Image 1: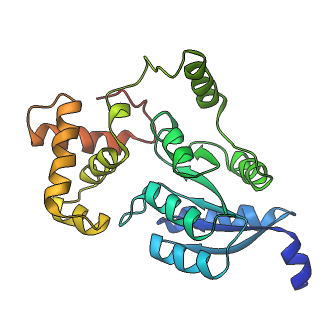
Image 2: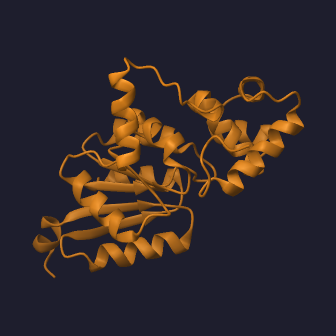
Length: 229
């Protein structure tokens, strides 16, 4: 295929720490007649370096990248390459993360429980400048707007700020306070403050109880509603 023909296709870049996911998306993109895989990365730093050098049309990324805060990565990509459309493809429940991702600058959110054909459809729509959300999430957002911005169905986890939720998730992924501080480029005291606020909002009396909840949620995150635990 000529370079001109490749450039006419929608350029897609995939960011995910799991090799199997990157390979699945690579195969699906390469099979699509109107898409071309510009590249892949397993970390936020790798993504920012590659996207900065050669911005794709669409970046498909996971919220949880191990060393990074996926919501912050969305913001950095938008700042570095504002024309790049971002589609989140995540194991974490859309009820908790979809709106946060959109507010951070993403153009769509798809859970990894969806069929890969749905991911391809989302890439197509996002590349055309549209926003892609499930009917469930879109309906919830519209219902809240009709009610004037109130959200009586917000779960305890939904009441956490983005930073508090990130710290909660990283605790559940097995990271220590020091590791989280290093990953988010914050000091230890700040992480402890986010942890304390999360503990209070979730109604836990001890850090150990918060840890158990976080571990359980991370293990069940791809399957369960956000109000479990």
